[in-house]
Image (cartoon, rainbow, N blue to C red; front, side, top):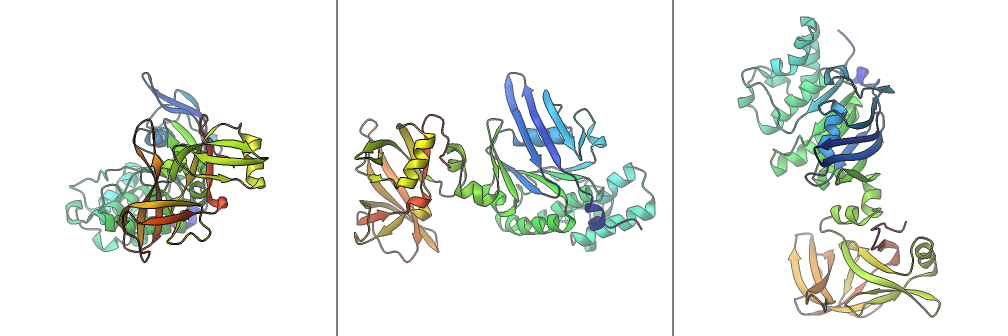
Length: 383
């Protein structure tokens, strides 16, 4: 028997994209993307529909020819190689299993196509099936399988080739919510076991946050930020990342920075809310921004509410309460846009034990360390 899946996986590879561009007519699907995907890393490409993440994945696989740039796998340019010559496996959104073949034959298909010896095929298929816990289903047809089992078969067909990398295009989008949660942990555990470089595409931020070693957030064909889930969440580099990551999304309110009595003051438009920045925060802001319009950001869980004004910063009234079991999302009104006559709200995530009713007064406070300030023009955050 040849080396096991785990043994072979030790020789995995990194993937590099250098200024990759892909156009479809006048539409720029991927715009000058450069990224290094580390050896044995689980990288998630995250973004809304149409952002270019799947097209980027398909260029790595060779399913789409690039219009500019270079793709390197294992320190070798594969830009002009066919998909078959890149030694990678692609797991599609739809499992694309052969309905007339058994699980065994579906997994074995790429090996048979490559004329691998029968005994080697049998040992490798059985090994993969045991790893994925579908060895008891090898004689079944796809119609006899659950959605999770079909996903495992699709993964097995990719794994049996012992590729340099796995590319996965929203492979869990067709599963129900409970099974998706289960498969997230199983897939991550499997990837860590076989140590395979993996690029996973999704629009689901929960999938990305729970599975990724690093996340590449994409928007309009460009990578906005590449970082660990913790850094992406706590230190978004621009407004798009701040808005896209988090549920509920980060509170974002327009304001202005002004110098008053040798202090830097942040005031929110159409409200009575303003506060003095510390000297350290003011120094950071002054190094990067002019005294101009900004966007103030804060996550709902960092907005603290109290029934008494002790240590308060702003007084407000409860507008809406959303009960979520362990927590509540409370909307408080800060003011009203005098031009559009639309109310200005701040969302707070509090423990479900917090007692409050619509129309009741509350006091809002937060720590300066958890606020975010973005330049309104460039949309870039101070770091």
